[in-house]
Length: 476
Image 1 (cartoon, rainbow, N blue to C red):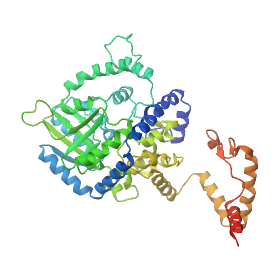
Image 2 (cartoon, rainbow, N blue to C red):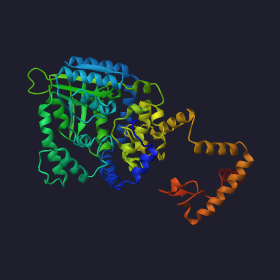
Image 3 (cartoon, helix red, strand yellow):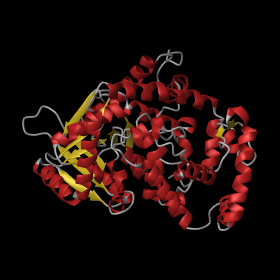
Image 4 (cartoon, one colour):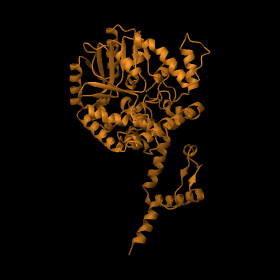
């Protein structure tokens, strides 16, 4: 969470709704992810079967995570590498900094890593005088803008290419000011040229991991750019930083998850690069790092293992829940004030940082259930968001409007005659007011809802009235 943010979630959401550029950019979510994802899944008849298998293998791994962590550590050490366990974000930052200092690295290249964002790694290294170069195109753009990712798969989904071109002209000195950056290939070519020097000069490369394989001690990254491979193989030291739940038992299990990951995330059968890294370069290898370190981050995951939010640790960070969420699709990622936005962030953020810092996020949902439906790991996101709402309410001090509404409802509900009289009067009245449309586009006390959507009207009879009618019809 960005505790320094001056805006509340509601203020940030309102600002996002009024941002015309952002609203245009968010249209790319449907074109770039939803439609492609649906087509990719349709071409794989066994998708739902794989989904069940992946859910089962992740549940099994989480149940025995301590054993698989030990097995993974043994295999990594056997390969000639080192494993570092980091209980907290601060521990992980310090471990990485020490490795960089021991390597005498003035420059570090980085592949895309949500975990490194989670622990604030870049700022920590830069404060120690180490230059950090983000090499993923989206993350490079985020870095030169001094911005934050707005999507866990597509960090700059909130921008258009004209804005990015302006950033390149400002942040890439020494190039002609009148150069053409009107097309995406122009932007890619310029980023490639600028970053090439960083790749060959860096002493340390840092990557994340989509998966860790206990059977072989391997880490797996999936990318659509070659930067991940260059970051992991060109420097003399390769650091993999990953959270502990990324483990799977075997290579076969990894392949099961990989068949779901790209289809759910980017609508591809498989990403352009799927890279398995196992230890440092061996004698006789023409290239590869001389040192290989794995930093395993806990940062609250162990507490989740034994609680109500354990299923969240099945998440493979595909972003499908964000892509299909009507709330995220309307306000984008920055409004959430968290590295992890959308439905997955509404569950994960309070688990990592506390409900005090994220009480609005579990409420930022229409509970349409689409996120759970499209999740390749079948994570019950709506029920977990509901659990966070319950915990927040149990803490006390809900908003005054909620307290008043609940008190009024409780007053009537405790008096059945009053409750039936009120519902018997209000329900038919609302049905008549709605007329033939059966929906309200404007209604007192519901303006926040009807401002952007219609509100279905009651059908004219209460549940008790319908139940009594059914009983009369069925009576002999």
